[in-house]
Structure formats: structure tokens, C-alpha cells
Image (cartoon, rainbow, N blue to C red; front, side, top):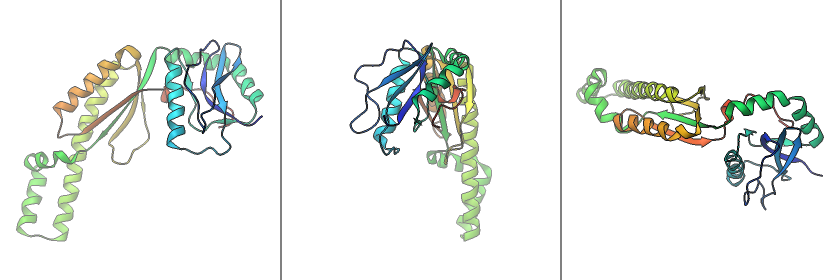
Length: 243
């Protein structure tokens, strides 16, 4: 038997979604490895695993389809187990932790918020920021490299300050609707990257809150709310075999 690709951990009585297939070309058939009350959702691993868009999408689609019928602890893309018995042993040994983690995310989804400065706010910034206005006039009167650089730096800093303020407002609005918040890694061009654990029936409220802020701050920041997503940021469980 070849290597086994792991999508995540869920309850043993999981019903695998119909017409949903795993990664690979052709797409692999999904199956479960059951260990007491738990199951790992797996498929055959391709001989050469690469982060192709096709497979990234398939991985995410499997997890989203599974989450429609119950909580699932998602594995990151690329987890391959060479020994299924070792994976089953890990599920048995860590059963209490896995079950607690599943209870934590039951009925919940992850939403991700990214906030970035917007160039559309440049004209408004020029009108309202005294430093930018002064440097712009100076460039007009005495064009030169140094003054142009200072103006560019002032503009970038001003746009970033505006975006950070909008980001604080958006994060506070979502935190009030969410059960947990987790900061994400730095993303180039963004002033905020954060995830929120939200009850599934509150996702529309979260979208409405972000849409309201976006409409009110069209020159302040770009806001992008993504989800529902598998609860990657809120599944604090031991690394699965193969990682």
C-alpha cells in the first residue's frame, strides 16, 4: 500500500459527502480510518505531491463538505502518513484531546479578515492631512528627489494609519460577534490579518458589520472577509502523523 493523504479528523460516524473526491489526477476516493470515537478522513496520496491549485481546492472542498455534517479538525495541505497503523494509534492515544477540540469548534466556522490601505484614499488624504498637503506644495514649488521621497513616505504612512484605524474598528466589531480571535501571519500589503471563530448562524451578521464599515470608510481601507473556512486557526491538537 502506498502513502495515505490526510484531510482531517472528525467523529467516527461521519458520512462522507457524495460526489466529493480527494486530491490527485484522477481525483482520489475518500475513505475513513476509524479509531474508537474518531475517524481520520483520508485518500491515496499521489506519488508526487505538489501544491497545485487543483489539489489545494480539492483539499479545501473536502473539509468544507465534511463540516456541513459536523465538526472537523482540518489538517494543513500536504499531510501524508506512511504508516496507517501509526496514525490510528495516534488517534487512540490522543482521543480526549481530539474530542475536546471537536467540541470546541462544533457549530462554528472560521472567518478571516484582511485589511489593506487603498490608493483610492490618496486624494482625500491630500486634502485632509496637513503634512501631506504641505509636502505636496513644497514639491510643486521646488521639485526634487528628496522632497518627492518625503512626500511618498508621508503618503504611505498616512494611508497606512487610516487603514490601521479601520482595521481596529473592524476587528472590534467582529470580536464582539465571535467566540474567539486568532492573529494571522503578516501578509505583504496588509495592515491586519486575523481569524475569528464564529457560530455558523452568525456569519451573515459578521458580513453585514464588515460591509457597513467598508461603505463608511471607502477611502480608508480595503476590507476582505473570507469564509466560512475550516477552523484551521482554532484546532489546537497534536500534529498528525506525517507532518
